[in-house]
Image (tube, rainbow, N blue to C red):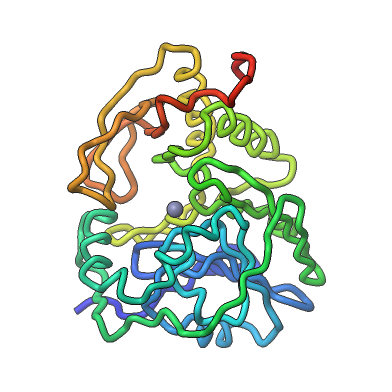
Length: 303
Ligand SMILES: [Zn+2]
């Protein structure tokens, strides 16, 4: 028997991390007037009821990017904010039969290694069926919760419309998948990603002190940890080495598509224990598109 409900962790005052069966994290920030929900997971529980158990404040839902483990329960809500560039990705998340439980479990096994903590069954699927309205989400948008303000920032790379959020009360950056250790950035030029990573890193210690990503707890390890800021530094250096031409490459299989051939990534940083795999490896593995290192017409000056 495994755990059959998402785990709620209070990571700061009035700030909750929801661990949805080891696959992904989403967050609930409660202010004096309103609340803010950041991401809406995969689709295996009643998220609206869980939010209601935490706060009775009115709230907005923002989505960091259009992947199904971040937008999966959007149809439980009347409206969500998402960057318009990620709208084309949403139907994948929205089609209920396009992400069956087998795939979820298979996906989780690949993501998290040991499968002994959770017990998720098909009858738990709950993606919602509302005709959800999408509202635009852009750089600089501020969600005023009363005693705290949460600002949206853009960091294209993992997807073209990837957004992250900085909360001025807890000084936490909620980054979704925009700067994870296994970042992959196929449709955005490397130089653009690099500028975004440098920008968020330059705000470390200024606007935020901790980063919480979309995947910081896993199946075999339920520890709630902020991301090691070294990951961000090493990602920056990985992409710089790529533009310089002295990158160290490795071949990595994508967990979500194990049938696809492994793809070329840049390895960078000291060897570490991966949080959700049984092996050790370089601190970051950055995927990229070899034909998309620079923006069109851009002078080749490494940021
Ligand atoms: Zn993603």
